[in-house]
Image 1 (spheres, rainbow, N blue to C red):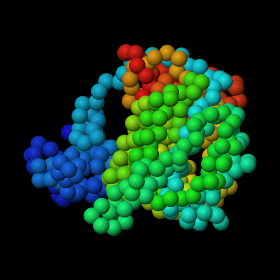
Image 2 (image 1 turned 60 degrees about the horizontal axis):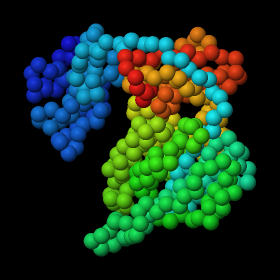
Image 3 (image 1 turned 180 degrees about the vertical axis):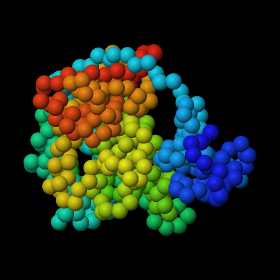
Length: 393
């Protein structure tokens, strides 16, 4: 069923003789033959064979391992019949109008925020970036409802309860979202100091629950901006040997927020290194498929406070000026299954100058498309699956 000759020497025979494996062949995808079981599943793109090894009969990332015409490689690495393309219906749009979005700033208050960053500490960089007299909240505070949540925890350092919270977890300091509250946010940031641990998934879940209980302010879109300097832990274990479990919890919390109509943007104030987890959070926060290691970086990072300010300013301008509302219900659809055009030119979903989902019934234009939209002489056209009422996921 696979394109090309996959039965060459070196192929790993599957337990099922009817399945041809791509593992063991030249250019076989990374992850082949990893150990697996019910508690340790394979990565996306593989299935767990009867001999408890991750295997695949296709790979969408290697052209010669593609499935036959009319088939598609599933997330478990098996070929399946390609589903018919959904019928698309014209979806009326409303260009950006007077709207006041809500942006909840979720700031890592862990002890590692004392590490230097561009001549100051990471904590001082965040304090000045967000709460400075000419900081982002002061500059955008009349156009955005800003809220602030600082999060950390203290752990027990020894004994049988090592790694468990010493007191409340997560420890949250919050300023309610409002217009023109830069003075209160500045005061809160300046009075606070880094504490200890980084229970990111727990803080995200708590903030999502708060936002859902409160609801959107003035009907505008809701977003979380997560500012952190590294790997998460969780209230389940604040001193883990590795952060993989906390990473999975954090990713799940971001995905849950998006399904609730709340996007998450990620701002990184740490040292260069392995940032794949941060990029996965950034993609999930926009409802996009999880990225490959070499995918475009979607989280915001810089080496100095000035560079970070530029990136953050572009983010906030985009939230205000570059979102388009879909004014008619569409069927529940998978990511990027619709079509969006600007002045009759088709835009690419996920492209730096294209469009991306922006929560329920909204899309956001990026790069050149955003700049053109901001100029006010553009026409946006959208077509999405229309079999049943629902919302854009």
